[in-house]
View (cartoon, rainbow, N blue to C red):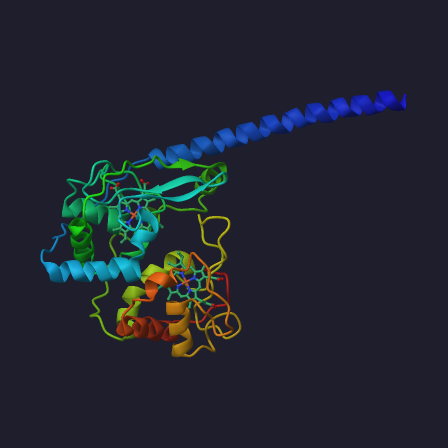
Length: 305
Ligand code: HEC
Ligand code: HEC
């Protein structure tokens, strides 16, 4: 009797189990469908013409911005010929495409407008909203600076490397379907006026530069989990001036050391993906501008992003 009960219980459990598996399969099917249709959706955006400057001054300026502020090489490779950004079961395979004019690049005949559509609006030439490409971080930069970035990228030797297709893992699909990970296009105010600050050690120029920190640290700069990040990454730190959980008690020298050498005031290593190796070469004025901006901006407790 007891035996029988047990086995029928087992059978019930097995049937219930099949039901759960079935439900999960439907849920994953649904998530897959929602994510796939969100990705396939195209948008039209009005893009202002952008002149690509010529000459070594622009190329040098672009090289500085790319290497020490904007992080393009973290995702598109040291030679900007493309690289795998992430490859794991949960998030899938994420690939930063070839930006050079070599074989395998899709940008060989990109015009200033095409570059601007990608860099400032987060949209590909085919009207697709770009995934993971942090265009929202670049919207505060002037025509001259974005033009210089393109001039630099185009001055690099062409790299012949085929792009790999991005293939999303189940967690990435879930995050996109639920809207937790948003496309840069949807985060950008496409009509916003750009700040008109001139480079210098001022909080106004810091307001331009801080754009490149907010993708990870949040627009309120209070840090927390980085949306769409690799699950192995630590949470972004609170870089607002909150005394308990942020940089409220830091001096400029301590900030400078964390930014350039990846060492916190307590000696702790600042871990990846915080790109301090790139920030090491930042100019003194730019570092001071960031600090001036952070000091003037409102303090927030950690994690509200
Ligand atoms: C966090 C990673 C990341 C960073 C940083 C990044 N990109 Fe990208 N970028 C990507 C990915 C991923 C794609 C492909 C997106 C897709 O196809 O949906 C992409 C696509 C592009 C495209 C192609 C757009 C198109 O029309 O197909 C251009 C151009 C580009 N990036 C330029 C840059 C430049 C220049 C920088 C630095 C100013 C930069 N990216 C920084 C990840 C990144
Ligand atoms: C790609 C993501 C990413 C970008 C871009 C980024 N950070 Fe970070 N940052 C992090 C993460 C993650 C940490 C926490 C590292 C740890 O816990 O070891 C961090 C830590 C820091 C710290 C150390 C704070 C502490 O309490 O130890 C400072 C300061 C900092 N970031 C400032 C900046 C500034 C300023 C910018 C822009 C110029 C920036 N970060 C851009 C991800 C990023």
